[in-house]
Image (cartoon, rainbow, N blue to C red; front, side, top):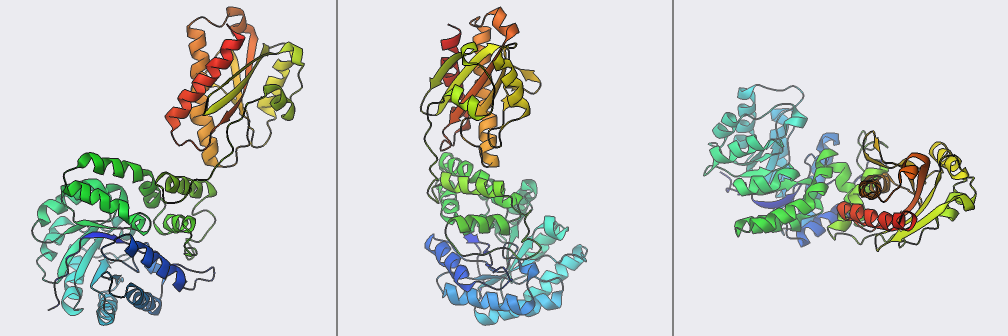
Length: 464
């Protein structure tokens, strides 16, 4: 009988670095293992879902497991991903993992040809009995399309060599039922990064997660805070990592985890085909990942150009708008976050023609948008806004045409509500705004408030 391994703490589901041709990048694999161990992980898990095991031949998986044992070099336990579709193949791979020095095996439920409950039980019981290595069950129904029912897991917990279960279902009700019914029998590990805090708070002993390639130390801090009874701190950290965790889960693990590790300077290559396609992660999604890493202090923040004073007349001319300056009333407002230049003129003036021109023929990266309070509710007088600096990514567009647009609309609506805008202007004028925003700012609400402040200052110069 093997010694009883107790799965607990934070264990990364390691990525497998591949070259463009699909070969292992051993240097990159070592980099990730060294990094995660330095960050205090309690074990490493190669050849799991995040490790793209389904794209590997048997001999490749064996090579990867052996490399992991060598690189870990006894510093932390190695929990080998050894699950296969057939029971015989799983037994063989698990025996190999035992022979090379792995501490336990993480075994995914059989997939494609899915068994009934009895088949699941017999599969795991056979591997645990024949392979001579502690077994961690692995429930990931979104990939296997078969759920390990709680009653089956309860029965398997009685098998001496089955030592835990990793639940990646993302179904917190199922996870809580597992924790309740397995208490005192075997531990539950969280596999869905977004569910880590509630799972651990309810009694899970740790997690095997893709995001632990990147932020294992933060997950450790969540665990420690819960154990100390400091739920306020645990919630604070979980909320800070929630968006990053969601990106990892939403885009399937390997691709977003590798994108994050690349931003950190690790040579992790790319996923294998068919994951290695142009549509797996868009440039905009990668930018979101980068921004979240900046927020968490994992990588230095990119510095964008400082906010500069907006010369609305110059901006209009650069945009190709044809107007006569003497027909325009101007206002300007700014703060540390936003700078605004505003031009107001009658609908029948040359600025009115420029208004139509900008809406129909905007410059690329300086696209003009109507100022609205909510869908189908434009402000009055009719107003449009355009970015003073070129918008280059979807995230920047979301930032500018979201909180900035909202702040501008609130400013106009506030002036209208307090009677600062004359009835004649409401009916006969149009407003064009050029806006520059601090793209280093990460607080969308603060940007909305700053925009409202800057636009209000500009409008006060026109309608006193």
